Length: 207
Image 1 (cartoon, one colour):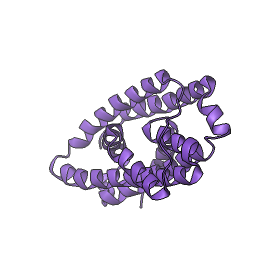
Image 2 (cartoon, one colour):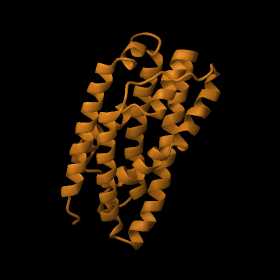
Image 3 (tube, helix red, strand yellow):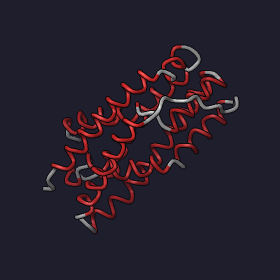
Image 4 (cartoon, helix red, strand yellow):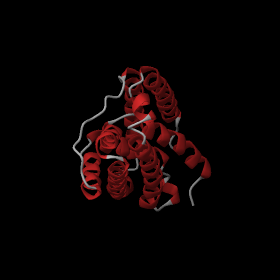
């Protein structure tokens, strides 16, 4: 069983990550503009599948590392603090989203390309390694299981948001994506959540 309070703390942080415009969202946006909602939804599913791969590999490696080096969680915690602050600054400085221009493609290829885009994104790899472990409690055991639960939350949120961006890219979504006011407000909200989480991690004491 996982601590419900930990899950409640994780959900808004995961939502901020999902809402932060990045390579995955831009890719789905581009597919929505060029290939329609079906391809965008398939690409979003591929992105979500890539996220599950990331958390599975991180969970497998971290379980063995923590057993041999208990101090590793503190080291990861401070890496997480630095990375979250960097994300907060990046959210404030991020310019308005520009629509990408991928070619039209069938759903199978869109899924494959979404998977590859996510797996080869170094920011996703670093974020999973620095972010998810902060919510994992080794005392509860089943570290891989905890990673998978958090990974499913991240993947589901990303699937919903990226699909919505792609589906509505040709209409209201396209207009919002090009709005400087919308992007700036989203940046402020994301930066506040990331900075608050960084402060929480910095003050956290290892039991």
